[in-house]
Length: 307
Image 1 (cartoon, helix red, strand yellow):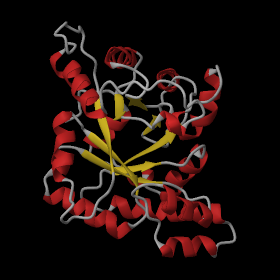
Image 2 (image 1 turned 90 degrees about the vertical axis):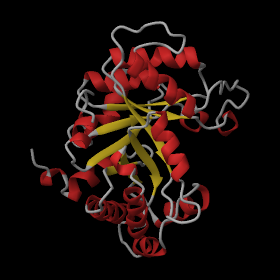
Image 3 (image 1 turned 120 degrees about the horizontal axis):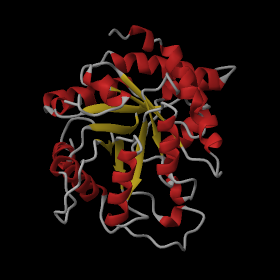
Image 4 (image 1 turned 135 degrees about the vertical axis):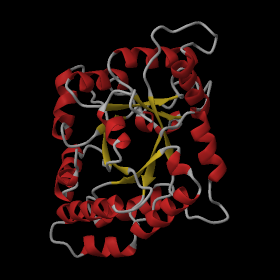
């Protein structure tokens, strides 16, 4: 369903291959070299690289600029767009400009509250939420027009993503929320971290049974854990995240906890790749692009691809 969308991520998912994406944050530098120094290790390894947009309400180089630099070097970016800092006109203009610059993957987010950052007195916009942003840019693509009805020629080519949190099938299964996001235009999901292989199996079983995997691709969040201490911190501070006790015990007993964290992540990647309904994995580790690249290589999954 994504044959008309340029970019490696859409092509890999359309081919039914297990996709692996990673994440980077734009630097505090006015230099393209600063961007490329961070992400060069992921070129030819990750199928796409997310570019965060003012994560934790802290300013960095423009995410659009960083993504354009990456695209010019043959790295398929996923441009994260938050509604915290811009109104609908600015966001629509960014989408059109990004497509013209070779950026076609977008992840629509609301964004962290300004109080989380280092300039808490800055104004928040939040004119629209992430769902409305998704609907507007979906229509720009599908109807070749702005919400006002004014024509866009040619229309942008867009591959639209949204965030999710893996859930246990049951009474609180988020079927309505998932379907609403898909109806808004979501073609792929990247989820919060999930280090529990059995939970991922149950989650994906629910997605398959609910018919959601026929409508969108689901990439499960993962990452190389740096230490048992960082795993415990994630359990305490990150919504929806639980690193199992067995993994923390492995890290505690390792002589090199970073190497053990990479090994655990590679094992989980291999496990995810065997689960029906799991279209891929999204690797996240702040300022650890090289570690994510190493995990992908060590998983051996790239060598298993055919075609």
